[in-house]
Length: 363
Ligand code: 5CU
Image (cartoon, rainbow, N blue to C red):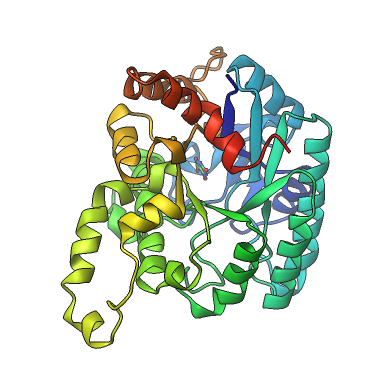
């Protein structure tokens, strides 16, 4: 049995340098109250001067950029192969004329990191989404020829207007043409006002537990509503965090669409593919949901053959510094074990077999 982690991040040294050089979000710096330990501030709203230092960013060390730490983490948690990806906010914040070069540098760095551990590391590349379309398409083509790349990671903003933006069509077309999987991951959460005036008292809980999954759910629903998968029937997307809340809400989304008089009048209901069909043919889900209940919803929606183990490393480390086993990882392992207690083959497929097949990791 092989264990493959498809949701595991790195910030390559070039990217860390960039964050250290900045003073507005996203950035890395030390704060007088937190001593020598640098903190990485990346989420919208994290930079509020009234935010206590323990809620402003998160402490960062080499586990975020040193690939040897990734390998040590994999060894500790019995992970054979990792498909690493740059974490949020990727290059979304870069000026248009800097994004293309930065993407090339980072993708080369990551591919190079993979080459140091043959057979153990593959990657999802990063797109320069603020650059002109032709620059983005060229990077998709370049990535498709790189030995260790198996798709791309991106957030929900697309070119700045979301994933239902028709201007993304040449990008979806290029990704489809090169059979390049999109690993779709949240970053922006929900508007700060939704979290209420006491959100800072609760650390990162509301943006991470609620903001991230709901952001993902809305982004994918907008793709569906705009007919992305009707135009690109072979475009495949791996959705982070078991699809946000999509598996649970899919029936309601489908019902709201089929009862919408405006969409019917506009002819948007004719020939459209139902969400259930897209779940079974275009969507893969990671198993980063930390419970059997969420995992079962994901299996019901997409199938056990489309579910892939992940950890979200280096995020969610244990709060007790001396712990070597990460609870965030063992919770996901246990959820898989319990959900597939009666089906050993499905458990093995979710832990690694599906990833090997879908991402062609044997090539
Ligand atoms: O803890 C966090 O902020 C995060 C994040 O930003 N991205 C992610 O993938 N997981 C946790």
